Figure 1 (cartoon, rainbow, N blue to C red):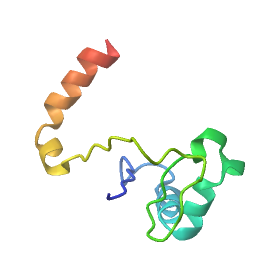
Figure 2: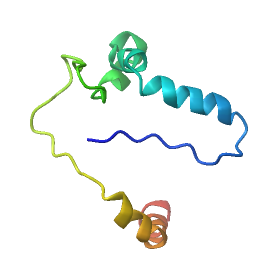
Figure 3: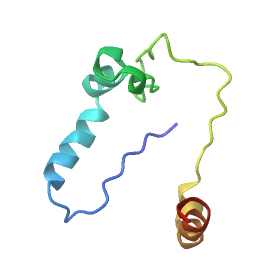
Figure 4: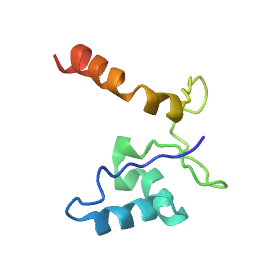
Length: 91
């Protein structure tokens, strides 16, 4: 599974801080913070994306149906995806 973290625009205020946060989250130290329940309660039930790390023991590991997104296909269909989201979720 490939981790993804998005920063919306390179000209946004605080872009340097956003980049540093992204770099931190995708390093071993950041992953350790993210899976520690003392740092986020229910938000700590993420699966680490760094090889060799063990997920929070309280997090369910079996019976999960992962969905793999084809990012190239999604990019090709972005306008129809946005329209569907607006019509079905926003409205």
